[in-house]
Image (cartoon, rainbow, N blue to C red):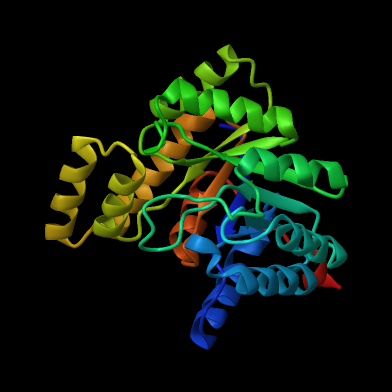
Length: 288
């Protein structure tokens, strides 16, 4: 089986303890030689400054290629583009451009009066700078706010046409879900790489709640398997096996890159990567 390229998503720390956890996560996963690592924005732009600081620190101290999430939420165009300019000045030239989730308690996304109306406008403005490689999000299953899955795919094509070079999907639980989406994207004329987003299941109750909120279908067999594993205290073994099998199925279906949502908990992601043949490599800073 071919060994996939991998990338990892982290979220910015809000406390000193969380800062140590992030650094420990980076130390565990960086030897796997990721294509890049990304740092998220909180809902409503709540971690904007934390994201900027975490991105700059990771870029400077880790030697990794770092991609910064950037959203349209609660900021003017000038403020958003100034953040992008700050990233470029710090040497960060990869951005994951997203509309962003509305602030907690809000009924839905409402553009700032002087801000970007949507992700396509943001992508176009970033593309015009000429400074960035731009990645975007994609939904293998219908976005809760979308009229249909085809509308999602049409929107993704517009994002690619606006200047994005790659898409990363929301997580899903069965490989066939991704393959159907990939086929539909090809039929729609999308030729940019589409990278599966993988969420190792650290906590089944939390993942199931998140899945329901974002429209990700939960297979009955998976719910039943975790109910049994919880009774037998074998959830870690099941989580590793389920995630490894999903990734293996994707690779056998022609996928060559995987993006892991680590939740700043690296052990399960590391174990799955090892099972897939992604082995540690000495980084330049390790041997200098």
